[in-house]
Amino acid sequence: MSSYDERSRYRDVPVYQVPDHRGRTVSVVAVPPPPEQAVAGVHLLRQGERPDHLAAQYLDDPAGFWRLAEANDAMQAEWLTERREITVPVRRS
Image (cartoon, rainbow, N blue to C red; front, side):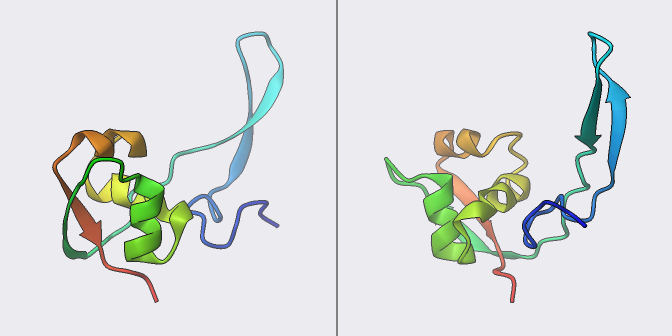
């Protein structure tokens, strides 16, 4: 059974054990491949807008900010705040 939320992209990713630099065994998950996402449109970013607010507005899921990052090839969602335009993926049913 997964400890991730049912909407998490990590929900079905296997967990495995590896030694860290101190020799301790730690659990890790690989980064899953980016999801296939159709584009719904483009948002013109205004000062003060945050990725989690945009995800709530467009995707009906504030925790879906990572989908905005993936759709915009941003390593971190915070990087979206440095852009003028943000590609918005289609909301999932």
